[in-house]
Length: 502
Image (tube, rainbow, N blue to C red; front, side, top):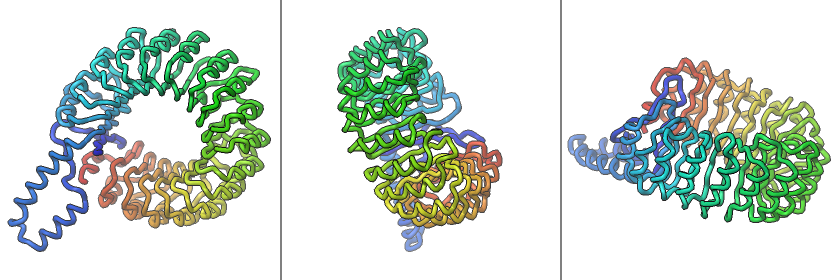
């Protein structure tokens, strides 16, 4: 699979141009071979063959591209989209994350298009009627009228849909989705559903994954209706709130096929306890209302491997000890909102030696000493220490021993400086690095980043001291595809042109 990406993240927005794409010629190992051949043979003898190979490479690479991602903030006019469609004729997946009011009519000329993600919406939804081969559609931020929904229901192959209904249209909109016989995955954004609308949802014939974001509370009646959708495998209610008595979760006990559950905000300890009968659950998301005592219930989920939790005021380092007993966890994500869960609690978590992913946000009093203990988690591939402001270059030095890491975030680390960046040089497997908001990093720190030769995604947003000269130091990073420089006001160069060199 080949992929073309347009990214606009610097002070001056870049853009994917129309016409023949610039692929930066061949892969880097082929280019190295070219250089070696040119030193061995006369340039005039070699160049004609080189030009021929390069021309065929561009033709193949363009035809092999199946994924196109456009992240430009600029207006995507119909003419520009037509040019892209004419070049990349075999696209299967098109993503336009920041574009709004897109004229999507040119996309009907893509016979292989199966996945279309335009959260910002289309200028004319009727164009969707041409995309009858779609299996995946994301229109998360475009309020659909009843007529718009009728157009969507023509897409009878849809298996996944992310949709926002116009105010007052929620119940009818969900009822119309029954016309989509293949719909297994549904995400409703800011849904305004009555009990009638929930009953329509329960009648969707093959629904197995459901995400609800609701303005109203998840009442007992609505929870009871959800409990009748017994084929559900994944249910996300994290953007819902339970009613005052907090008993909504109890009515989900019938969903015995669930493997993933995101509990609604306000779910009390008793609600979590009531769901321990759902023994197939492997991934659970808990809101801030859980307490130290409530965490005991997690031990009763025998298949639990992933825990995402907002650590509220009723959870302290005692709760960390409870979590540390869940030795089957491979993925742990904790967002801390109180001062009772500290760096000492993080030390307790190092008992979870099977972890491959650990994400910690806003842990109070987390220092280099605490980070040093993370070195025992040698299986980690993902480590996020976000808004952990006590970590300095010494702590980063401990992290550098985790050589399996492919994804690291130290974002919003107030004490992360050029010296800390230099300590990352040992992490040669890193493909993603997030240093957003580390305002102590300067151009000098870019020298350390050049040693991370596998980097594909680098976020330096709000690193105010970085200039064009610092960005140019990143030129040796051959695999770099995304470079985020939002709010780096001293960077004025065209980032897209910079990334296209490879």
